[in-house]
Image (cartoon, rainbow, N blue to C red; front, side, top):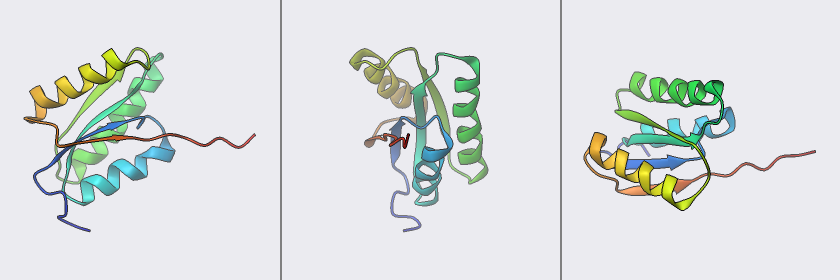
Length: 102
């Protein structure tokens, strides 16, 4: 899969926890630059997004963080706009979701 997404920019929503870190890393390993977007009501949530972005940079890919104040369409549009302004464009939007076991 290496190189499959080379030159592409992916906006990854819902990437703020370790369960989704693997998705971000896999996309970067496939060659994509990423806008890491996630809900960040607390400072620790935003720090988690930056941690993932730093891991993407360490893989030699570009990344930016979009801390979303709430889960709504306007926040999503803003994330895509930030990806476009900072990374040049947005080729693919991926929305991850968690399944929690009680």
